[in-house]
Amino acid sequence: MDDMDVKGGGVASVERAFAVLRAFTRETPRLTLAELAEATQLYKSTILRLAQTLEAEGLLARTPAGQYHIGPAALQLARLYQQSVEPAEIILPALRLLNRETGESACFNIRNGDNRVCVYRIESVHRLRDHVMVGDIIPLKNGAAGHILTAFAGARGQKHALVRKRGVAISLGEVSPGVAAIAAPVFEGGERLSGALVVSGPRSRMDDSTIRKIEPLLLRTAREVTGQLGGDASLIGER
Image (cartoon, rainbow, N blue to C red):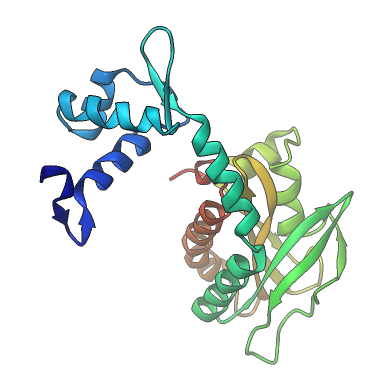
């Protein structure tokens, strides 16, 4: 009956199995039985039973040395998830949240060669706003979104390294005079750069203090969208 115990509305054995799977990270892709027990705070006997079941189902695998790692069935599930997800169903709600929380325009840009393209946008309720439209093409060298798409594509130089470290880029009047913008990256399918989330508005409303308040919201939203798209959220700035 132990494996069928219900805990907090869920099945305890399933929760323990997922605790085992979540113990693996980019830093620790392979773990011994003892390391799994330490990471999950579960008994080794419990870990062993769970690991045997997960291995039989292909969700775990073992090296000849006895270390465990994520199995091939996880990749199959990831592919099915990616095929079932429509990016707009994830990105548009995120833009609406940013728009609602900041009162400013929010958009999503993708890279197209040396340019960026606005593919989704939610307008600010204010009459005074920037006037980028869906489909607009803007050179990568201009604007916060362009800096994000360049930096996280691996561009060299201290400026790009600082953007990657911080996780956001800020621009003041680079695309339109008097307009400020802050952008953060979104990844999909692991480490593949998908695009950039952007919040923009007139400098009269988006002063330095306001931009600092928007930054953690934007980072949090970018990480959530990245997770929903199957990307690695740990790539987005310092936590």
